[in-house]
Image (cartoon, one colour):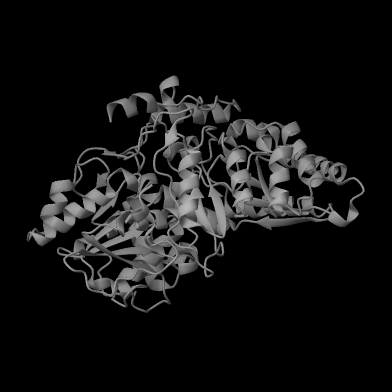
Length: 557
């Protein structure tokens, strides 16, 4: 591990504002600083770019409405930077990025910026579907930052310092892999990915990790570290299981070295399939021995073991999160969730036995074709969960395990088999959430937490939209928010979220070459409708599978 990679860890950027021939680069998180300090992707990009001798990278966070965006590092304003890069994680941030540009005197529309600054977009939305925000950006980096983003920024720096013009640079890069220039790129844009390294399982060559910890962060004073990227299960609602293929695991020695160098007080393990990592127990045992606190994101119920829970308990972890997803076995099969009821109930009982204080269980509502019978089955499942909790606790009345049932509304995302599916109406989603809430009231120590149907449908609209949605986003930024914009916008939300899309229809995100075949996703959509479970990705990696297209895609890159 290069020690220089952690030079900014845990402290502010020491740059006094003098660039010394480096390219002034604004790395913008279109949200509050507290969220940025708990967002691994944004920090990983900062860690990648900031140490480079040819780039002077400064951090920007969302401030108060109507105020100019100012650098966290030296007080410069956003309009002073020739390169402005936005790291965008969620669709709801679209409003913030437009406001930050406008409030800083930078025209939000790329068509109104013939010269510098050059505004770049990156993050998950840049390769899920950047179409709704394409008119605001000069170009997007499509894919994993480690696969060439720094080199592109350095090339831009040299181009500018040699007297090059912005439009000429965009012409130069418009058809490169990993680059999407709205209005200029002619072919499909190839997603960039760091190919897996050989090992027991496909290895993640450069796991992401924090470069800052902060008491201001949402996850207070926590050092985040990436255990795995991608997910082999292929749950049909989950974009991460498709846009981050091939699934890769970090090497335990790499993670130990990162922790030794950083020496943080607390480590947060980040991944979509933590209990699938073959070194999980060894790693958290090592953290425990070095007296480093840690926490895990949600784990699969079939990965919960006595050994895992014993280590968590001894390390002070008292909350466990399990995802049930579908209200019934039928819906879980349709989603290809691959979790058995008995395994889930066994995990609940084990958690109660081992003294877990708080069990969080998550489900999704609003599935295509769901019925009242599915939620009647959920009611019976909650009875079984309550019984499993009581069995696990035995007579330990003073250690009663609280349960929170969280319900989110299904958002059929691009690059999933459900991308063709309609969403439930706001009225339907409110009704089913009310039904689930009533079910939880029957049980002592079981609370309910529900999603906002409006926010879910907004996310669906923004994630499945085309370039015409930029007008809606502009209205939201100018008129005071999303609800007001919906009343003023002359577009039709139902076109994007209230209908089943046709098999042969051109989708707004089809111009991205993700590696996963569209025909494969459509077959999986049909299997959803038939409630058929599909196999997971093989542990050996894409070379052992000829199903989704990733094997040949990786070979041809």
